[in-house]
Amino acid sequence: MIDVKSLSWPWPWSWPGRLRKAVDPYIAALLGTVALAALLPASGRAAGAVGGAAAIAIGLLFFLYGARLSTREAVHGLRQWKLHLLVGASTFVLFPLLGLAMGGLAPFLLTDRLYTGVLFLCVVPSTVQSSIALTSTARGNVPAAICAGTYSSLIGMALTPLLAAWLIGSRVGFSADGLLGIATQLLLPFVAGQCLRRWIGEFTVRHRRALGLLDRGAILLVVYTAFSRGMTEGVWQQLTPVRLLALLSLAATLLAVALATTSYAARRLGFGREDRIAIVFCGSNKSLATGLPMAAVLFGESAGPVILPLMLYHQLQLMVCTVIAARWARLSVGSTPLTSAHTPTP
Image 1 (cartoon, rainbow, N blue to C red):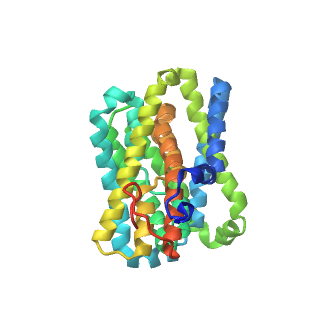
Image 2 (cartoon, rainbow, N blue to C red):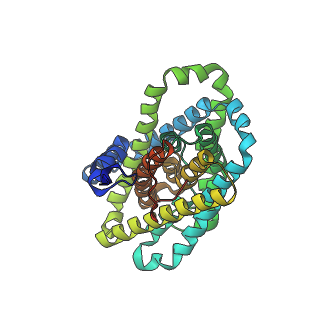
Image 3 (tube, rainbow, N blue to C red):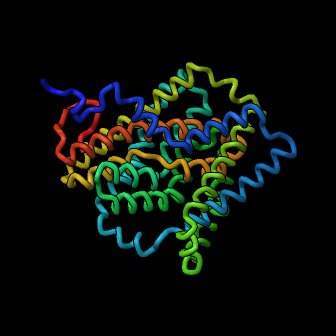
């Protein structure tokens, strides 16, 4: 008799445990921050103080990004340029096209601001930490994932605002001032961090955990500021359960198409298994750590509804990709394959 529990597909009785592992504690902190903003939104002078603190935190966040980035490693990773090109095409070509394609459905399902958030989600660069963790779990090419995520973040600092200007234009709260804000609040601190890396690089490595908490604290402050503004302006009254479900469905569709497309393209182009794993995860994931500060700078007081699609997509990608990575890890050590139309093959 076949023991169905030994098969490689994650059966329903194992899902609750897997989902608990997939839910990042940081996401719980984000949800708690949203709840705090709903109950105690910053207003008046407090809103000004919180907004100023968020702006300073964003600059510090990107300064630390620059200080941590090893220029030598980034240049060394250019040897796998075909892999990085495919990841970039998924992040900055496939996703924007999917976002535009969803424009026909958006007026019937979402508010204008929520669809703006979907478009912004589609131009956000790939994540670094999640892609590395998932690639490592699935026994893929971790160095390639590190470089692909790094290149995506670097390119995104210039390309994300430009794509946002093209796709979103004069939509909610977006203006040319946002491009200047990107340069002054994000790019300049990043360049300063790179210039000072020679002297402070070792310090950032030694205190990686403490500085990581600082990073996450800065992002939580951005979320609190954005959602507080939405509460004081009454924006969230427009977010009905039906619209929230529609937004979640669109995010799930984006993720499914990205996973399937990157998996198919990597196989057709002849990449090895380890490289295909890195391509799938780097090409389908979106960075919360980079996207939220960018949205705060680009959209200012209108950032609240814009960041909601990215937050939902990020949690969804963690849950789904964690299950996929665990399955691929078992297959790599000789588990019995079980073909499924719902899980792309690396």
